[in-house]
Image (cartoon, rainbow, N blue to C red; front, side):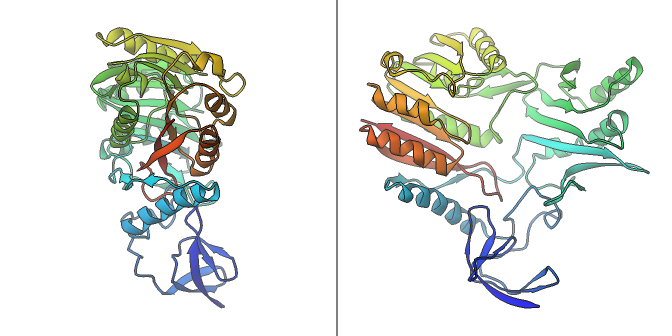
Length: 399
């Protein structure tokens, strides 16, 4: 039996004792008792609340639902500020904008057959044990309402030896399902699954990469611009978060006429900004660019969008070509884009709109731009991942 006091919290949401031991599920100022690896909080912090989700104790989806929202906001802002300070950067960090609970429009459920039934949900914290999550407080209720369908798909398409992945995306025309690691289906089972999906008014179901049935083209909107997506199209986690990102990026490139959009994806920023500026959209994924090009053709009245498939890690856009544009939008993965950022820094570009999902790599890349003569004008934190350690950043650089 051991007593301890939690003095701080790390970037993953675990409390840290005076001895440097990390204890998940604790908050600064709390006194805890550990007995045979069982944690008991004997003096809770004023920032502690009762988790709103009945699955929280076991599910690995959320890490800090036991804290007040005001504490979570301050904690995430501190993460961003600390990363910037480490690089000697000071700037205007705007108040965080947070998506509401029950707003996630994308989620991957896992399904497994058991001896008597099936179980569908998320993995238990630190294990491969599945926990049913049909009362999840993160995911849009319109997805959760399809839990009976997810169980039927698991019954028909999973085995006891493997886990089936049910990738869900909520679109304007209904739920888009992408089933991964399902068993090979015979014609009869395909027909049964198609029939069940029609009853549940699913827009489309794809099985192990092959279209099984489509009842309505899965469509999402970027500022009233319709985009028909592919099964593996990357989208922002929440519609609210997407709109906030688009607004801030649009504000940061206002007045631009010739824009290069790096890591463009399916056009989250290219399409809205093409309402007033020409765009070169660059991304590694030909499928994403095909989605973007199709949307550009269907949404009339936009400026020209040229799409180019290019791996920006292996082959970044060089400074001489960047000099042809007045503004850069860059939205790299979590690893950032150090070499591409260096080319931007060395170019004649005068404005950069940066989107990042990793404060640490964002700060590294920001320092490169600042050393190249840019000023970091502002940072806008956006939280689409409620009760987790994840945070996104939109920022504007100018020189």
